Length: 94
Ligand SMILES: [Zn+2]
Image 1 (tube, rainbow, N blue to C red):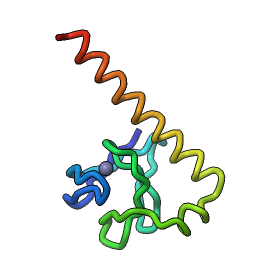
Image 2 (cartoon, protein in one colour):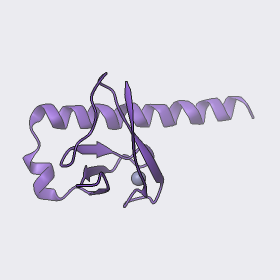
Image 3 (tube, rainbow, N blue to C red):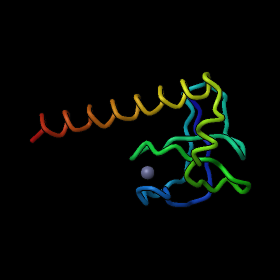
């Protein structure tokens, strides 16, 4: 995994504070136009110039290659599993 700092900002969907991007692929860093996934709500976002994110449009989602779509769904699935595990851990510790 590779983590890259991005400007402090908020997810346009859930308003979570965002300040970093982590790729599941070592050495991969985001660039303007790249899709990403919110670490909390898993909304698919797009980096704009200046590395600020906005919600992906339907046309952008339709234009994703199968490989990019697979990578986004894999990331969403990993985030949801992380949240499930955290809830299980919290339940076990209370
Ligand atoms: Zn979000």
